[in-house]
Length: 267
Image (tube, rainbow, N blue to C red):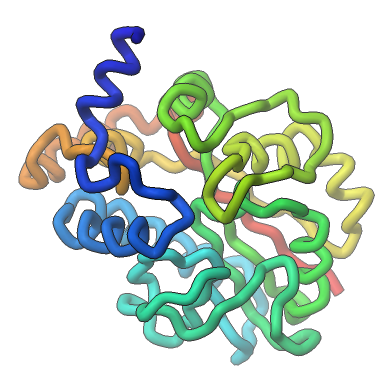
């Protein structure tokens, strides 16, 4: 076993060892881990704030629905109660069970769709984009936060999970996953929105990518251990870590672990 794998095994959240990523038990443990980690909650809170800020900046004024997809153990709705919180799997914290590739919403009835760390789990992104074009109000859109593809990120994601890959060379967008969580390609957002951007624009002329940028809370994300690993530094270090994230902001394209993509419907 390599030194990195030994370190990864030692850092793994003990309660998750041997737990099926697609099981209800996984959600239960993730919920407890998130509650126990103020540093991690701060990162997710910033994700939610970024989604709302970009929504209000770029989407047309509409009283239509705001929907979170792939919510999992998210507390997005607790911070912004107007949001409809959904996932493909049933959970107590959700409003609805929704398959993002086959949504139960009427045509032109949704103002915004938010997806955090879920896009790379979609088996067929084309179905998702067709649904966006159908359910979104004109001038409104979708905001996705997903694994980044920079110098550090592409090395980090290739090694950190055994149940997911990071393959930037995958030819097609369709991914034959082994379950909701198993077998996903974390490079999917890079493939679709960066490498194959022209293909996306040709297939979906009514959907435009208006923002794609790296996020800068990567230090706290790693040091908190995320949802799957032990926290490395106590949460009271958060202000200091956040200061260093600010100082290194010019290097986000190198160090970032997540990027945010904003898609808007034209007509």
